[in-house]
Length: 405
Image 1: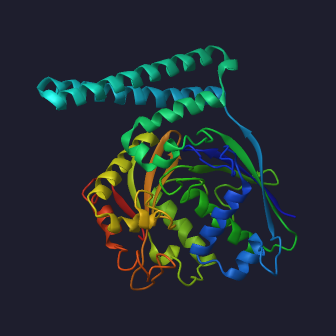
Image 2 (image 1 turned 90 degrees about the horizontal axis):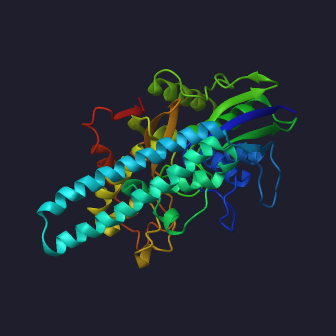
Image 3 (image 1 turned 30 degrees about the vertical axis):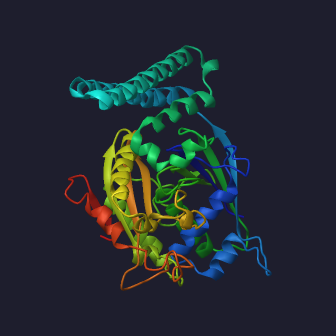
């Protein structure tokens, strides 16, 4: 039996849990995402059943077992990282307060009263952040005051950023519990003796895609739940940079790193399935930007996304995913968004935001929704809006298309 140990780190807050919404790492959620990426990369139905298992009439357990072990935090490292987050939020709030004061000087009547109210709200938020920073400073000197709850209190502050809040609106609205960034854990991956080398290669293709292009948990397609694989070991040997031909940690030129790995995956999988998008025919990957603060990247992208969406009629917006809870005819429909936001840690405390777009083309079409030929979806899927959104950034120097090359 082959066994691998995979060290993982949560990069952006992870909203994963069971039916009671209590935050927990769940193998079911991880396996679900692995299967999805396996399918869109062209893994066959037969291979999926054999490798991951099947619950139908001819059920089988599959050839691989994934077990979550050893959840922990590095207290010193996380105090420093979360202080950076709180300091940045405080800086942005103070900047916004200064901007409001300038607007208040020339405003009159109702508009002035409205701006004064917003200023008071920001002053309350500033005092809240200062209070949390005091707790963090105390935890530096007394490790017993460091806790996961303190990290959560800090990371909830990021919802004060408009764009970030928009991307995760339902998470804040429902006060969802989450696993904070900085959490590290181990995945123990074990293969049945019947698993051959090809089976293991195909599994690691899905693992690479899920962790390097995908996210986990709720609002995963909006940048939440990014998890980085830091190390893969087999029998005590570090195989992270050459795991069945795949390099799991970003290195060198990001465009080359992604394309080299995708080319390797295409050799192993790529049997496109009917009616679903295929990675090698329907996906486009762009670098939106890089920054030392991942939350600034998501906030900026979120503000751009909000600005773009609100200019479009409600019916046109369905291409970005369903439900639209405020609209009766769309509130009970489900369709994951074909636009994905992915934060990658490419170096220590250096992050890149990827925009990943899935859309049909002349070479390969796929359906948007099983009921797309019926009202209210019929004739309302405006695929061109995905391209229009991406086109907003083509004149920005840091924006770059990296796949297809």
